[in-house]
Length: 256
Image (cartoon, rainbow, N blue to C red; front, top):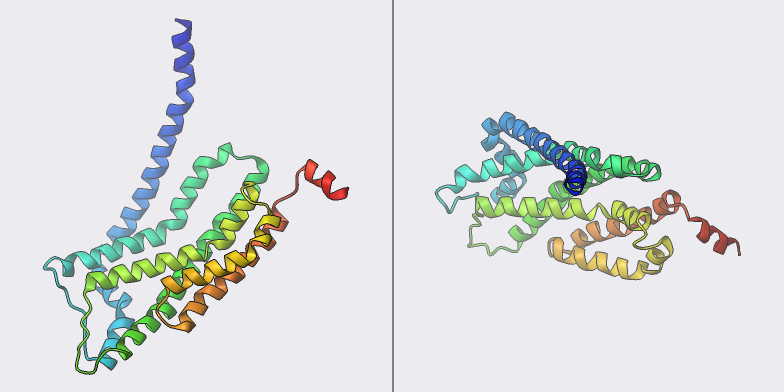
């Protein structure tokens, strides 16, 4: 009887944590649905605005336009885009819900790092996505239109165009999270600051390789992603030196 009572008592914290996690997820999902419901009426207008850089370039170079190769694409593509924009807008609120769930289990020094990391991750993601939309994608559209044969009219499919926009925005947004990832690696002890500095040449090569596969097939677009990634890695190292304090054994070794 005593064993059953102890097992029941031990299971209570787990149940309460699961209930809180469910509530946090419901809040995040509700925020997405509210924003989506507010914008869904303007889904077609939103799609027209987002794809305006492509349609303007098509008109200049090939007199083409966007087409729907599936009977449901003209209806589903704007809704899909509106849903992704809802996720994009509510991302800080969703991350905050995750933070509110895990913060009670963090130490004081970990909480001190969490708030700056939370804010910087949101800002950097938005900056990366904005660069992809306002610079990289128009460059890619123009490059493809210029190399297109003169007797061929380019009519991209609206679904594939949307997938390209989402893919590039997410890729650039994730690439700009390098400083946050660097600080987390150092703070959790996965890699020390000295190890990150020693691996700098490999990181630089990796940045250029990733940029080569993500960006359009021109040198300037690749540099426009690779160079900021390298700079952001250095920024991450600088912040790691400031944020991650050495433990007592490390201090003794450094003094000796």
